[in-house]
Each structure stands twice: as structure tokens, then as C-alpha cells.
Image 1 (spheres, rainbow, N blue to C red):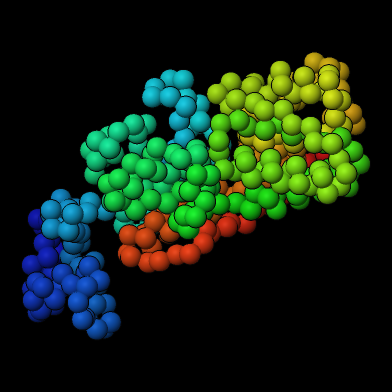
Image 2 (cartoon, rainbow, N blue to C red):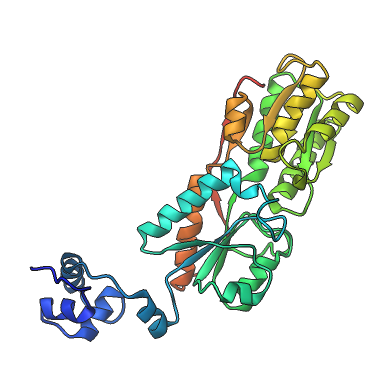
Length: 334
């Protein structure tokens, strides 16, 4: 079959297979009563001709652009003061989500910070994935206001009933690392916890407190504002080590771990002989520093979120969040 030199149209495909434009359109868009063999024949002809649907025309016809939005956390409206997008976890997650969307024929738009309905409307996306929503997250509300399908990675604490969620087993992961620390000999395990209202932070803290009560341990929790940056864990960890003298610290957020290590160094503590250090989220920093951490497998989470969003766009129903597998990576720090 010769390939046309101009951009092939759906009429070219129809002419190649000897069928009506309506039949070809239904076959390529998964509509109508077209048998599998015919769909396959039409798809093969379209591929040989190099036919690709005109996204502008499709949007005018269906109201959909085919574009999916990916919304990463942001502390402010500017980008210069926002380090979150550069974190190891989000880089892996965004890359995997983009690959999964591309494989399904959908472009992905990494959105700027969203403040108003118009901010989102102007992007022209069909739906979106919101990563790590805060409690009663405004960005989730914007999608719902425009009646656009939205999936979250980790839950919005103010919307616990929402099933369109991909999340880690934060409770089970926390218990796994605490069991490991206890088995290694730690008796006073402290938690450096993220303030701010994230679902994963609340779940991790609740699991830590429940585990401590079950094992007759005193909970030692120091809250840290993640906006303090990479070394944000330094002073809080130093306060913990000076005041409470724990023999292990579980760092809840990726950006706190280096601060814990620096605090231990300042106080002349050896790791792991004097202090065991673990992180609730693995990263290249944790790997480089030989810190035990939980690998949340952000690649799998990104892929799963896109799959859920496409299911929702197709009209599927769901009654529970999707929980992805994680792995405790034991390293020299414990």
C-alpha cells in the first residue's frame, strides 16, 4: 500500500480499506458495532498510511484534547523557591507517568501551579493526576469544579472516601522499618515527621504511634516543616538527639535525611553504632549515604495513576484505592 505524501486523512484510510468514513472512524475510536477482524484491518491500514488523528479536530468533535495533566506538589506560586519537583521520587514518578501516557497515545502536561479554575481550564487537559494532595486540596477541587476526572497519588485526608487513589501501604511500610530497627537492637526510636497535612505523613505518624503503644515504647515525635529544605531536618534532629537521646531516627521525608546525618556528625555520634538512621522514602541521597529506606517504587505508582485516570476517562467505576507494593532496602545505617 503506497504511503501518501501529504498528511493522511481518515478518508485515505477509508479509501484504502473500501469502507465508509463512519465505519473507519468508529473502528479507530472504539465506537460502534465493528467486528474485531475489521477493526484490526482498519488499524493496520491506518498504520501503513501513517495516519494519526488530528487532535484539534478531535477536540472540536468530542470536547477532548487527549492531553493528561500531571500536578506535582508546590509550596508557592513561584518556581525558584520550590525544590519539590527536583526530588528523586517525583522525577521517577513523572518519567514513568509520561511513558505510560505516551504508550497509550496521550501527551502529558506537567502543569504550572494551579490557583484558579481558569488556570486549569486554560490548559485544556481531559483529566489529571495530583501528586501528594494536602488536606482538602484546592487543586483536586479545581478538577472537580470543571467535572474533569482526577486521580491522586496518595490520599487527600479530607476526602478519605475517594476510590480514585494510588497509594503506598504507609502503615505496613512503617511497621516494617520499625520492626527492623527493633530487631537490630534499637529501643528508643524517634520519628522526624512532616507537618502540613499530607495523607502519607498522617498515616506514617499514626502507624508509628500505634506500633510504639503496642510495644510499650515512648513515642518520640518531632514535627518539621518541609519548606525548610534539604537541611530542614538538621536542627530538629539535633534537638531530638540532645533532649531525648534516641538510638534510632526514622526520617519521614526525603529532604530530612541529610539533616539527620549532619546532626549526628555534629554531636560525634557514629552510625550505626550510636544511632541508626532510616528513611520512609528511598532516594539517590539515601542510596549514596548507605541509609536504610523504603523504596515506594515511584515508577509503578506513576504508571498505575495513568492507568487509573484512563479507566476513569473511559467511564469505569472503582470502590477502593489501589495500593502499590514497596520494599524495605536495608543498608549500612541500620
